Image 1 (cartoon, helix red, strand yellow):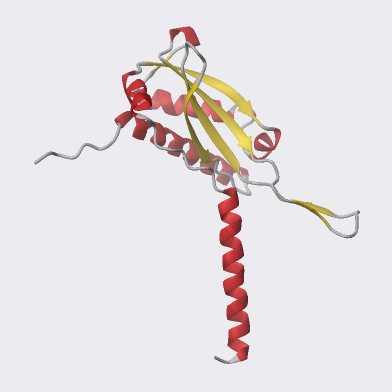
Image 2 (cartoon, rainbow, N blue to C red):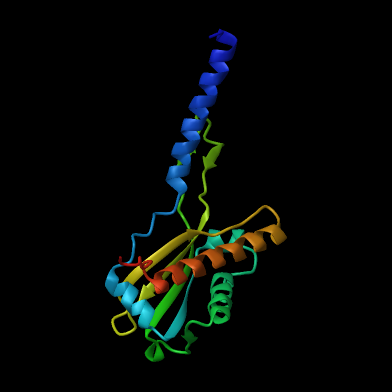
Length: 184
């Protein structure tokens, strides 16, 4: 192969490898499948208390709509779905859903040789939904997804709303339980 082609091709392959490794670092940790007990609890639950776990400072800065946007959007999505009755206190609930907007802390902080310049890498925003037992406040299950955002406020709002839809779909998937296969 010609050296004029080989060198750029090798550089491109190296760049793709580095980008793949970088993407692996920022991907949300996969939620393990819920246990049969969690599926049973979520399937039988009729009343949900939605708790606002708040948002990290960086999350609020990058998501349009203010500090309660994740809570407000998820509340509206769950209300529209209509599967659960949303109650006013944890004492009335079969389960507690706690939504928290999080910005992963920088994994990489590099300072150049010149101390006047430093570079910080920020990670994408994430939505964490914890399913809690109302009597013990212990975590039963956690769902983590990326929180959509964009460079403009209108596009960021659309991307964030899609993230809430994805989170609601994940809840729906747990409530529906594992797909039943017909027995011969």
